[in-house]
Image (cartoon, rainbow, N blue to C red; front, side, top):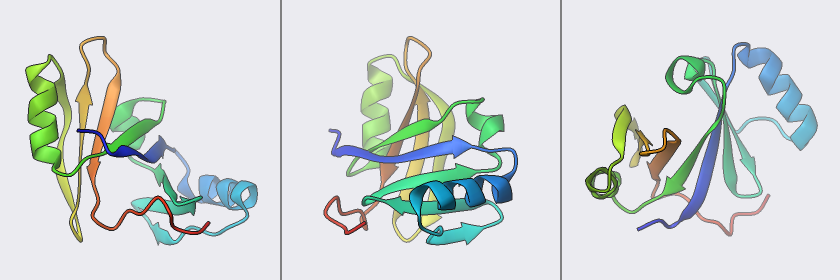
Amino acid sequence: MFLGLRTVVYPVRDLDTAKRWWSTVLGIAPYFDEPYYAGFNAGGYELGLDPHGHTESGTGPVVYWGVEDVEQAAATLMQTGATTHAPLTDHGGGIRTTTLTTPDGTLLGLIENPHFSATEPT
């Protein structure tokens, strides 16, 4: 069911400060930069900064696993005891996410992203 790791989203309280720091550390500017989210292509994987994430995920990051069909994957995982933490969100362009809580309380992100390619250049 899982296609591999795709994205890590860090909840941030100060998006501008976080963007400056990560730009310095990674040596690149975000490829996606909006007031509600900044995204970096870090070696072909998404490093996201979410200024509202602390209200959804707490203080830690959420890792998103790639799946072909986010609704189907979520339903399968819920049959094994996972529950919905954040509802399915359509981000446009075929990108859809949801966050589940596993039976032990861990957050698990799922992402359906038809544009992802692990072989993208850094």
